[in-house]
Image (cartoon, rainbow over the protein chains, first blue to last red):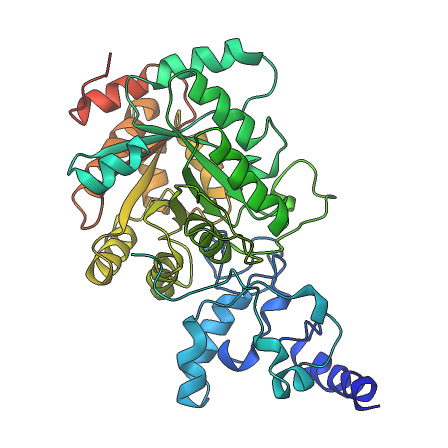
Amino acid sequence: MLKKLLPVVEHALKVPVWDCRMCGQCVLHSTGMTCPMTCPKTLRNGPCGGVREDGNCEVEPEMRCIWVKAYDRTISLPLPKVWKEHYNELRPPVDMQLQGTSSWINLVTKRDQQTPAGWSVEDGGH
Amino acid sequence: MSLLREKLENSKDLVFTAEFPSVDGGGMASVEKTAARLAPWFDAVNATDNPAAHAHASNTTTAIAMKMHGLEPIMQIVCRDKNRLAIQSDMMGASLHGITNLSLLTGDDVTAGDEPEARRVFDIDSAQAINIARNMAMGTYLSGRKIDPAPDFYIGAVENSAAPPFDYRIQRALKKYRAGAKFLQLQICYHPDRLEAFCKGVAKIAPDLKLIPTIVLVKGARGLGFMNDKVPGINVPASTMARVQKASDPSVEVNKLTLELAQHALTLPGVRGLHVTDFRHDETINDLMNELGRTPKR
């Protein structure tokens, strides 16, 4: 029951505020409350090299680059320090199986932290 | 071991890389001709992956053709056209043919190309692709499935030192470093101050990350204007544009500008060479390399 209800509630709340795409693995807290899935390239790890001189998007010239926005907001919004520290973490590839599910449930069950066995980010191998 | 890795990791020599022009018609004869032009000057050459979102001969096949004609390829993979399965098979397929230098990047959007109606993929991003390549080099696919023996990848990436958010570009470069990149080819930067701040910032924290800024050979003010207007993320300052436009011979002036940018870039911390993109396809490249004190390999 909850599994069916929560995605509906989450969708109703998060779409108007953040233009949420229901990826089911929410990282808003670490991106200055800016949804990276609204980037036309759905980049999870920062801005591409195509950002315009005025800070707008390569693909949609009228839109502010969401990663420029995320960077500014991470600095300016009164967010918890630990959230801000997560800004620069290396986020794993999106798990497409979670599309449309509730990120709240996935957070509680830690399903959103499951990554493929070959994903490891320890030291960069240097 | 790749010659590029050997040079960057085990010597202090400067490394010059270039962009292999996209292959369409012309077959192996055209590859041979281009390879002969580039071979004397360059240590390694990028086999591009549908640059500017235009379809061409594929990255892997171009890299193989280049290798057959004596060039050391750096195989580019962009995240726009392929999902994570296809990207891993690109890497593994390259390795099958002894191609181990990789340059992994996000890629221009489909709207930058001549087929804007295409579906964009971006299943993974460049930082994730770098990490996947690194893990493959350590013996596992993303799934965790073993690869034995592991491919001997030498992993590179790209960063734009001159696009907003400026302060953050250093962090992003370092994120790619932490993900597993050993060298970064930097996009062309017409703001020497921005390039300088970027290189200093990166070298301070990751002195072993090899930086290779790009310089671009264009024919004159129109070429510069094209870079400014059409190439995503590239900005040419108005004063630089005016300098070339107002010169008595813009073609000579733009070459002077290129040489100045190149010489400045080579003085910066962390910089281990230059990447040259040649839109002129004439003898200018020889002049530039001579001015930079390079001697052609025979």
